[in-house]
Image 1: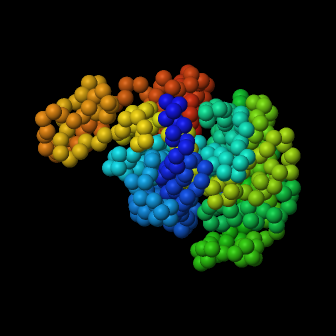
Image 2: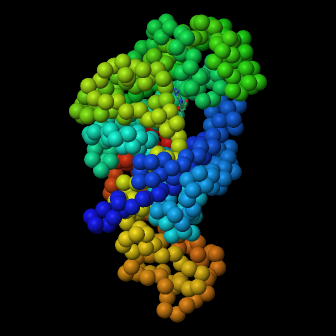
Image 3: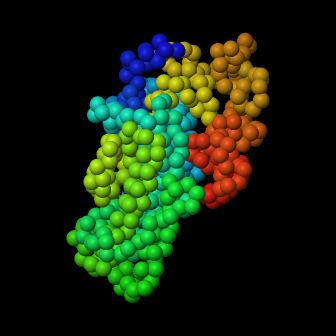
Length: 477
Ligand code: KG4
Ligand code: ZN
């Protein structure tokens, strides 16, 4: 095992990453988990912009349109063909179900057709690896244990990161994510989607202390975040004034000039609104940094990682620098802060070393597929012959190739009908509950209760895995 890992480390390992969890279709080729050979991101901003947020159904359709050209472009730019890859990694969750399905199914198909290992990557872990990738490349690896703050449009989570990339959840938002708060405030004031970048550009033109927002006091876990109170305070502020004409002016600008310049936005935003934006951004930064610093202190962190779309925020970066924290604070470069596939391929590299591969069904499975260079290889049913009888075991598990359970029959049979090919990959209902987001089984779940109920939560993404609807985040399983 050690010899095989050493052999892998000495050679060049190319992983194709695919990301489609929300409104970006992305593909990237990353070498040895630290060099981005190519990275292509197709944004759906123009599609969703007119609705002021992501429309899940439209997102899935756009992913379907973009996935093939985006992957081709990433491979072309990297100057590598599919046969030159060592593994394919794809985001398996959390995210929009329809969107995830497109990227994951495409990755599965490629891996299946090419006999490549498939690696399922958690999107939040991907964001953490965007920073780890760059710090390794720069020769200043992140020291562990580290505190990771992932703040994006869908998540605001605090994790302790230990050796071998083991994560413990320390706190998370109880309502809106930080990026979501940016997007909702922007929409309320007539700015286009996504709201984060435009508020970030306008905030320096206002007074951050003009509007006093109260800091959310959390009962229970003091490391949890809350942004809904802040969002409501902004709504009350807007309702108390007659801003209808201003908001209509900005909506008109967003409609007529999708890529308006800062000067154009400043021309339609009065000083009072600029003050509101600056104060809102100040409150978000305070909320994020205060709880992140408290968590880092609690775990005696040797470094802090701030990642996710909101980490692109210039105000947040400046505040983190100005705080003079007693450990280094690592941010991704702006291109890797928002969703991209390089972070997915980077997060897949340690999994490749650990042979932590995904199966072709819904469930996560370890070490069932061999790696090209060493060990046994994943063998696909070929068109000439294979035994259709189900080998030992229930469900699709028995159909996976293992050296001890060959699929090839002694007497060749012709390739069966499509239905027969498909059936082996459909697994029966899993007996133990499985996390819908990251496919961890109940045995791997933590026993901590979810929303003070005696329920299991997924150790990796903390989704409630025994209930149909997760109480804290009201996500349906
Ligand atoms: O990580 P990401 O691309 O997608 C998700 O995983 O959700 O993050 C997108 C979010 C959006 O809500 C967007 O408003 C926010 O990140 N965002 C920003 C900035 N750039 C993007 N928020 C604050 N300041 C920015 N500069
Ligand atoms: Zn993201």
